[in-house]
Length: 227
Image (cartoon, rainbow, N blue to C red; front, top):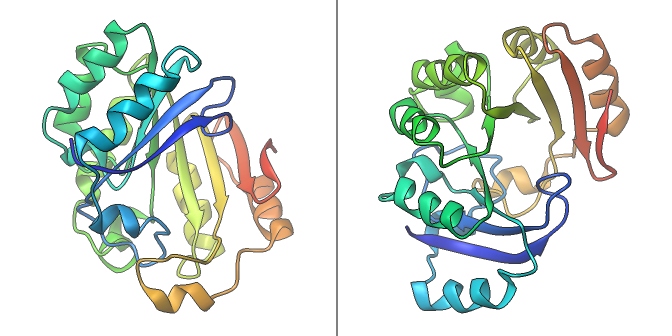
């Protein structure tokens, strides 16, 4: 596991849980709006994160593994198993580009919750996410929708997506769909740092119009709320 950064204790990323957050280093997509570019380039050694985990492991009840992209990490299943054996819940945040690994994690019961990013309509992944893995993402979506694992789908309203595209994404998300506000800063493509953030009222109004999800939420600077 290549670790980009850690957060000792987080109370928001997994609602109802106190989490130790691990951002893995490296990603197989290159979304220009990604604001975790430091996790693409910089990795901590095991000595950098393990002492911090030892200090807080008795005051957290979960570990969230996010990115970068966790599903491209070697030994992810073993890593998750060790966390489970320590008595903690595991949440995975992923772009869904490796459904085979995701399936293994679910079958081995080493993840308790999965948040899957849906970057764009599947035919537009090459432009929005700089990736051709959209059919693999679709397989991951289908896998989750047919599983009993707690899961949710997320989409960031980037400057590149139209309302029509977002509504098309929502129609495919059977379950919880979270529409996230684009917040500029620390973007993989520096030109996105100067683009405007998505207005709160705009994401709220679009989420209200969306059809398909059984539950709709928005995530903004104000926090997460059910629509």
